[in-house]
Image (cartoon, rainbow, N blue to C red):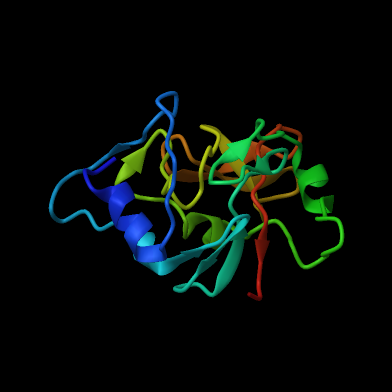
Length: 169
């Protein structure tokens, strides 16, 4: 993580995040040309609004719960693609599986392990996340947040993580 990255995010959104020593930090490019994405996100306790894409995201993965003061409790719960497509957030049917392009939009290109802004999306699993974008009768796209790459050639029967998105704020 770039020096000052967490301080910049805290200042930008007016939050004070507590990071424990057991938190694994991403490996990020520290070059002056690397641009952090935190200024485009409005972070709330359980959700984050992306000013660029106008999408609202769940901060924690499916299977995790939001922890007061920041972070996520529990582990991401991998499911197959059909189960991921059928998942709904109780009480709010507007939450859904993101498209490939939507999920690619939150990849932090300058970071790996995970390739995501950890202050915005804490405790992201170092694995693939399903998208709603099919790539054939038996395959679908996923985005792997270990490396920040998307791929199409994975069977829908594979078990991957899920992050929900919502079109409206």
